[in-house]
Length: 155
Image: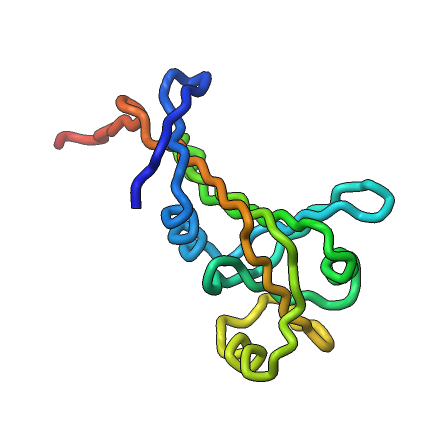
């Protein structure tokens, strides 16, 4: 897993542009991401979801409402997850873009039911798979001189 590019940012360092494998590996380290879609009114909606990485995309559960309506319309969905350490000014962000599909195959549903549970129980949850057509990611690495150690006492 290697970063494939770097770009400057205002802090004087560089962000790493991450390859697909690195992005998918990073997604496996967090449990919450955000799903975004465009509502029929044109409004962009973004909501947090628990998710798991499954093959070349992510799976999350949903109940009736905006997310499922967007999936039924067949429009693009975006999914973003990240992890940051504010004190050290480091972190990463991964974005997936694709079309969602409702998982209906009984064997797949049973398999997905064995994966970690969602945080909020919903009546009649539906599994949604977002297969990524596009995967992009950036990492802001630790910068030299970014950490100071302060010793207190006589050591």
